[in-house]
Amino acid sequence: MSYRVAKQALLQTLRRPLVGNALSLYAVQGLNFLVPLLLVPYLLRVLGPRSYGAIIFAQALMGYAVVVTEYGFNLTAARDISIVRNDARAVAKIYWKTTAAKLLLALVSFIVIAVIVLLTPALRQSWAVTACCGTMVLGSIAFPQWYFQGLERLRETAVIQALAKIVTALAVLAVVHSPADVLPAAFILSASQLAGVAAASCLGKSVAPKLFFRPTAADVRDALASGWHMFVSGASVTLYGYTNTFILGLICGEQAVAIYNVGYRVVFALQSLVSPVTQAIYPRASMLFDKDPAQAWLLITRVARVLMPAVAAASVLLAVLAPYIVDVLAGQGYAAVVPVLRILCIVPVCVTAAQLLAQCVMVNNGLTGPLVRIYLGVGLINLVVLPGLVWEFAANGAALSLVLAELAGPVLMARCIARHRRTTLATELVH
View 1 (spheres, rainbow, N blue to C red):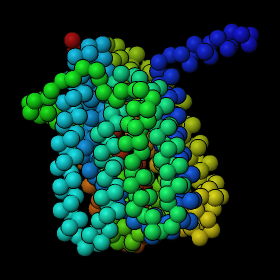
View 2: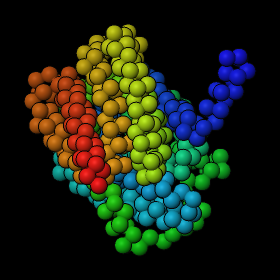
View 3: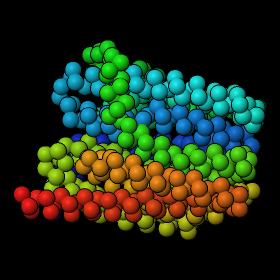
């Protein structure tokens, strides 16, 4: 093949919406996790492990409000918009009723968290840090990633969020210089999505449809009902997401949270390389499962054959290089991060499998009920073993608990999908 032909083939591939969206999401995800990861060495040295751990602990608590506010809309609303993307009125209706539901959920979440903080002495002492982290929730409402995902207009969000991450990082470097700056640090580190809205405004990009639809109470109830199964799934995942950090902080203190978080951030940076692919193919898989299931399975199989080995190889490399990575990020005083990082190295492989199976297959095949039961079961198992492991092994225990949960999820999902396919095939043969 000549150079000109190869170049033309490459350009045609890059112009495809699916590939372009995936590359755009890689740019976003790279900055979403690379910029905070690059800030970790600075924050650990400037704030110290206790102040840094206090912010992570507060973000874990506020993370519950984010999960409640998102309510599974990142999947259900994105799917619904993808199906009606050519109908402006239908898109506007989905957007505004979803936003109204998110505002209601955020209000309820803030009230509940305020009561919890007031009733808990340890949380009451650092209530200001928790309040500053509330910008996480506001940002999840103001910047509707699900809206752009449903329309497959993810290149716009790539530029917007890239600018937001850069501005956030520069603000941290300009404002945060000592442990006394813990409050502005908490606010800035939690406000990246709000910065994205500001960046969109500066670029003249709208984060909402042009048409306005006034949602009724019935519309809000409909949005909540349609996202219920995915909300339960998301809440279950939180049992082994934010909860591991939160329980670790309650039992072992803020320094243990800092140690765990450094390892988790490194692994999460690798794990984030998976999300652009699954987010990009999700709306396409939704359409294909609706019109041509065979093509949908072919798409997912091709993606899995490339993605799974690549993530596995990267995870092995991460385990081998763990001491050097920790030394660069946190310094010699954080050698305790190395075993945490090595324990967590298998998580990206598990999450890759889970995202493909849950988001791209189970949701699009009407298996939300079994998916909820899987997430609930795995989350409850984690919740049972977590305190004992944390009490015995501190940050290493939190990492072990997370690995057990992430391993169980895709195994149960694969069994459920296999049973569904056998049942579907048998029904087709009968008819």
